[in-house]
Amino acid sequence: MDVLYDFLTFRYFISHNVLHIIYFLGAAGIPFLTWRLSQRLQSWLEESLSGVIRPRRQALDGNQSTSHIYGLFFLMFVFMEIAWRVIFEFLMAFLQMREALMMLIGM
Image 1 (cartoon, rainbow, N blue to C red):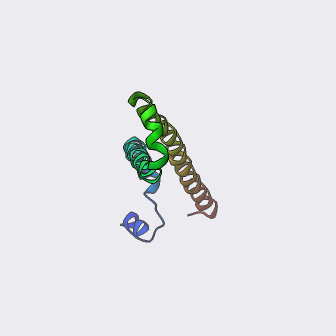
Image 2: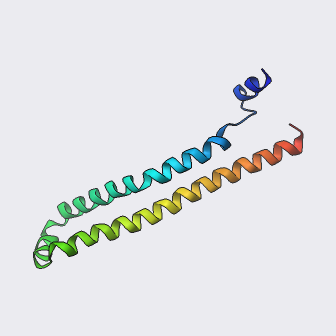
């Protein structure tokens, strides 16, 4: 009963245990989000800069055009994975500091 009371009064956090699960789910979902963002960004750029891109695209073959989206996908994927990892490292550090402070005051 005390554990339930501690949970409801936020003396006991479950986030440290759940944080690992959420991190891996998000890390697995980032490639799908990145692919959708890179496709959307490419189509937005094509619509916005159609007068500039259309003559250039006619000079290029289709193979080089698709390499641009793969390069954009790779860069966005790396940056998003690093940002996701940094966010969770900050969260884990915060929870570890909280636990250490709680131990110091004897709770």
